[in-house]
Image (tube, rainbow, N blue to C red; front, side, top):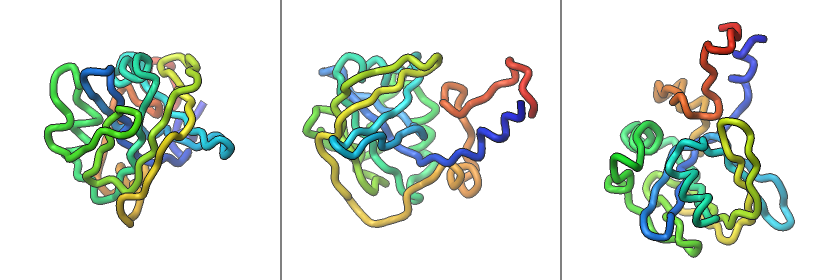
Length: 174
């Protein structure tokens, strides 16, 4: 199997955040998608080992903030490559508490979507959270950051817990 075929799927780049009722956390995600229009429903895939997964499972809410191409690597790195168990990811960005109680990242965000989880599906390394949109807004105009832009223009890397990370352990073609 040529795993490079999987790299041709297109994705956006989002800050997905949640709360456990006391603390907040978030991470960079590329797998956010609208899955229904009535009611408006989106899904997100989160690695089971991530603190954000734990918080979403507990609170049953999350926010997906659509990042613009102006998002600096410092923010992407902090939310994408560091654990909320070790650092406060939000100390370098402005945010507000959304209607669900989950934080909404304001800096470098074009739009946000707040979601109440209706169901979750175990898909191996990740949990697919599917939920109804309870609030959404556009914060500013701009170009949404795609995963391709993140790699090609920003020189970004893929963390090993990402949905698109493909290691060599399966003997797949380079």
